[in-house]
View 1 (cartoon, rainbow, N blue to C red):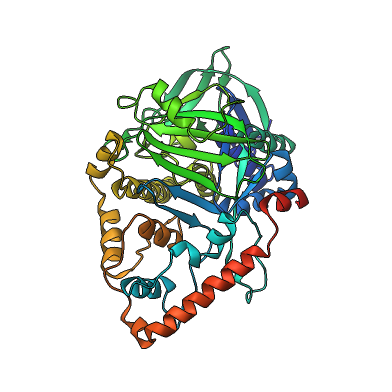
View 2 (view 1 turned 135 degrees about the horizontal axis):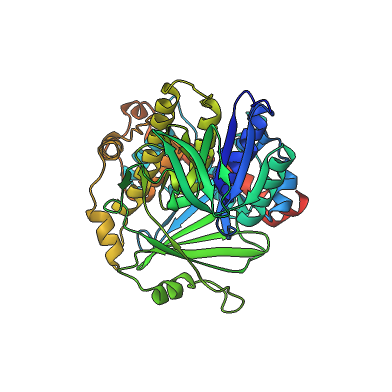
Length: 488
C-alpha cells in the first residue's frame, strides 16, 4: 500500500482534544494523511464555556452553528461575570467594546477622568455586551457598522460529551479511523516515537503521533514539566450538575468563595457547576458543600472530582510527537480558555504540519507560539488571584503572595500608571477584556491620556450618560436569551 503524501497520523487519547484534532486534520489534509484515533480513557462530562474564536474554528470545519447548538444543548455566551473576588462587588468581562473612542482616545481614559471627578458609573454600564447579558437578553453582531450591536461577539456553552460526539461523527465522515485501546508501551527511536504498543499487543506505527491523553501525557511525558503550583494555588475541582434555570443569562458565572472559586455554566436543560480549590486547605466534603451554594436543593448530581495540575511541558512538539490540550499544559479555567488552548494547538499544528522527514524549524516555531499563548493565559489567571480582595481563605493568601511574572508585572504597572494596555504576541484576550479585568479587580489608572483634557468634563459626562442610555435602550429592545435559543 502506498503511503499517503503527508504520512500516517496516530492520535492517542480522547475527549475534545482528540476529536477536535482529528476533525480539523481530516478537513485540512483532505485525504493526504492517514488519520487514526486510538481512544483511551472515560467519556468526558460536564459543560464547556468557550471564547468567540471557537466559532471561526467551527466555520473552518464546516459546522452549521444552529445544528451544532441543538445537538449539544448549547446556550449563548456574551462573557463571564466575576463576583465575590472583592466581597460585595462584581464585574463583567464581556465580549465587545467598552464605550466608544472619543476623538481618537479610548473610552476608559474618559471614564477614568469622570471617576476622578466622582462622576463615573460602573464600567459595566458602558459595555453594551455586559448590559445585554445582565438583562438576560441576546443578540448576534449586527453586520451594519453603524449599529451599536456591530461591536458584539459571542461564545457558546456546550455539553462536552455531546460536542465530542459531533466532532467524532465529523471526523469519521472525513475518513478518520477509530478504535478503543490502552497504551502499554511507547517505543522510542532516538528523539522520535517508533511505535505505540497497545494492551492487546497491537503495534501502532505512524509518522506523527498526537498525545491527547490529558495530564497523564502518556506519549510526551518524558519531556520536562514546568510546574506552576507556586503561581496558581488550586490543584483540585469538584463538579456537580442540576436542572437549569429557563431564564439563565448568556453568561458564565465565576464566583469567588472562601474555599476557592465556583463556576456556573448554563446549558438548555441543566446547570454545570463546581468549585476549584486546594486539597490541603479544603476537604472534599467542604468543597462539595461550597459548590452547592446557590444551587437547587433537589436534583443535584453526585459530585465528580478532578485533578488540576497547573503548568506546561517545556516543549509540546518533540520529534514526531505533539501534545494537544492537557498533555501540553493546563491553566485552571477561570477565564474559560481551556478549550482555546486546544483550539490554538490544533490550529498551529495545521499551519506547521510536519511532513515526514521535514525540518526541525517547524517544531521550534510551534513551541514558541504555544509557549506565548499559554503564558499569557497563565498570567491572566495569576491576575485574578493577585488582585483578589478576599481575606477569608488561605487559598487567597497564597495567591496574593505568589510571585508575579515579569511580563504581567509590567502590564499591571503600565495600566496602573496611565491606563495603557500592553498587548504581547499571541494574546488570547483582547484589550477591552484586559480593561474590564484590571478595573474590575481594582487596578485603577493613576492618570488618563492627557488628550482627554481637550474635552470639558461636563461634555464628557453628558456624552457618557447618552452612551449609557443608548446601550440600555438597545438592550431592552432585544429578545430574551430563551427566545433567541427557541428561534435558533
